[in-house]
Image (tube, rainbow, N blue to C red; front, side, top):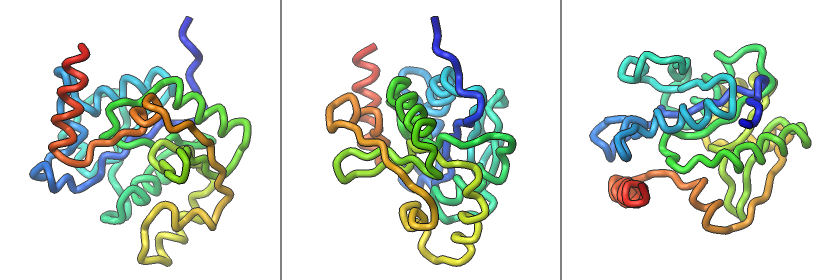
Length: 205
C-alpha cells in the first residue's frame, strides 16, 4: 500500500541556473535512459507531495503538464531567488520542500525522513547535514519566512542561502556518511559528471 502524500507541503524543483557549461541548455532537460532529469524529479516528488512546482526562467521549453511553473521574480541571485519566487507563488501551504533539477538520485525514504523531522521539530528551515556538509537544496522552508527572506535579499549583496540562516530558526537533520546518503544528495555540475552518472544509471537498467 503506497504511503500517503504530504498535502500541506509543496515540493519545489529549482531549474533556474545559467547552465553555461551546457551551452545554455537547462540541465533539467538532459536525458538519462530516455527520460529527462525534470521528468524523473517530477515523477518521484509527485509520489510524495500533492503538488510539484518548477521554478525556471524558461517555462516555455518545458512540457505542458500538471507541474506548475514560475519564473524568478528577482533574477541572477542563485537558488535564493528560486526559493523567494516559490514563496511568492505558493499559497495556503505550511512549507516547501526545495530540491534542484540536477539531482538524479532523489530518494523517497530520505525525503520522507526529512519531512517527518521537520514536522517533529517545527523550525523555520530544516537542513540535512552530513558531518559538516549541509545541503540547502533538499531542505524544508516554512512559507512564513517570506517577509524576512524578502527583506534580506533587498538589503544584501551576498546571496548564499546560509547567509540568511541567522535571521530565522534553522535546525538540522543529521545523516550518516554512507553510499546511499551520498548518492541521494549527488548533483550534476559538469558534462563529465553527467556522462558518468548517465552511464552508471543506464548500465544498471
